[in-house]
Amino acid sequence: MILIQVKVNYPFIYFLVKHNLVLVYHIKTSSYVTISNMNENGECNAYELNGEIPFGEFNHEKHKYLEGRSFFVNEEGLNMMVSEINKQIQLHRPIVDSGPVHIVSMESAAGSLRVGLPRPRTVIGFPDSLSIGPISNLHTEAGRSHRNEWLYENINSEQEDNVLENQIMNTLREIEDIAPDGPIYVWYGNNAIEQVGLRFFLYQLREKTNVIFLINSPELYESSKDEEPIFYTSQIESSELSIIFEKNKKPLSDEERTRYHIEWEQLSETNEVLRIWEDNEIKSVSEDYYDTFIIETLEEMHLEQEQKDFIKTADLIGEILTRNLQIDIFYLESRIRHLVYSKVFELKGIPKSMRHYSVKLR
Image (cartoon, rainbow, N blue to C red; front, side):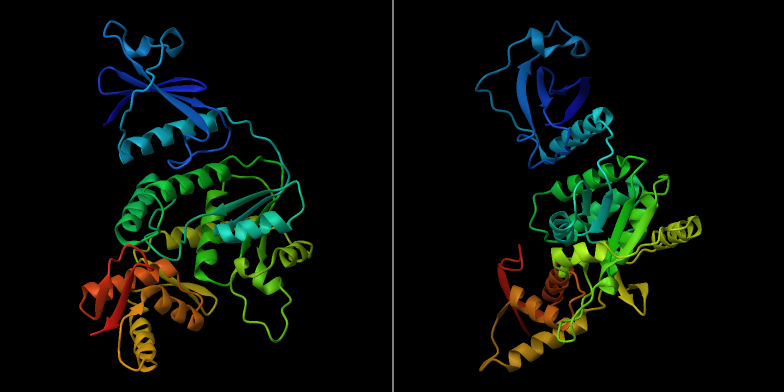
């Protein structure tokens, strides 16, 4: 089913589907929605459009909704509905200064910040890993569309289709909605995900006049000698993040902000789908960069078996991460599938997620 017309009667939005069926969505929240939670944050009812009434004159208050009527909207249609709903939420959402704003890559890190930081504060977690996938012109709609298509074709994220896309757009809306008065803190670590994210966030904030502070959490974290190396903000306990936040911070100068903007523009001109953090810089590398490492790790795991046999993909990925923590697990899984398709690995099971299949060397 294709949604052909939209009419706004806020907080209601009318979607004309087919020629005589109108879906009326009642917005009941100021929070942005996704395909997976749109029914929890609003209400949708179907109405029959009398042929004598043009859609532009339709008002649901003068009609009775169709009880017990089921209807189907495909994924593309639902995504379009969510986009329009969020557009209206943003238009009518009050911009309120709720204290400092903290931005960080990865939801796990955002969760730790929400627990550890004093209120009032707003924490925005970016749900996507920018160390993998195309980032060419990601600050544009065309760039985001190209990236979403690549993720859909290559990455088993184990989420419903379009949900990640909704979450990313909602995060960008939240960044756009930041009030102009409070300070903004961008947290990052010594890894490609957070380093690329840092530059992307600062580019998204380029029109903001707020004071911006950068917090490199691993550098400010006081670890004991026996601890494993810290690369990610998400590796640090909430209580420790609170201590890090209290340390002296220097705001970014205009020159520093401009430098980061330029660095993002340079990154967004690259076409590679894999980035690493090495020698204190972001490096774009070939998509098969980790393939030899994956093969060698599986070889070593086979040596520990009495007889070479299939190994769960999740176990292989777990072993790889003990040797190199700075690899995106979903990218690893995509390369393992590639090695299966390339006849390097044998397959047992259905590769719909890393838990559902096993591999062994041919």
